[in-house]
Length: 156
Image (cartoon, rainbow, N blue to C red; front, side, top):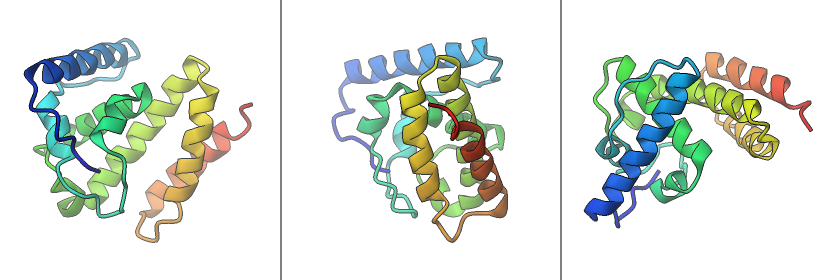
């Protein structure tokens, strides 16, 4: 994961916070309990390289409704576990980050299903299959991802 260099612009930061707040409201309406998530936390989370080699950038996330929702949930799950958000979590708390990632993926797919965004679901199923190739993934995550593959693979 890589942060974007153009986020020093105050207007850009305000616009990102508006997007975060919009999706936070959407999540609350869908009974997902969420704390405040701040632009700086999102930026901080993307400051370094991911140990998994994930190449998704903050720009990618900001351009995709579903990726932004995913990251908001992932950050929220980590905050609920009591962590201060930083890129270091990817290394120091890899198992907890993976748990948060699994929860974020479950919510992301469920929300996409609710609005019948089957194209996005198909894209993410491909991503999930690649995640399952990671030899360091915990058994709980393997089971969770396989359950999502089973649940959503029949969707056309």
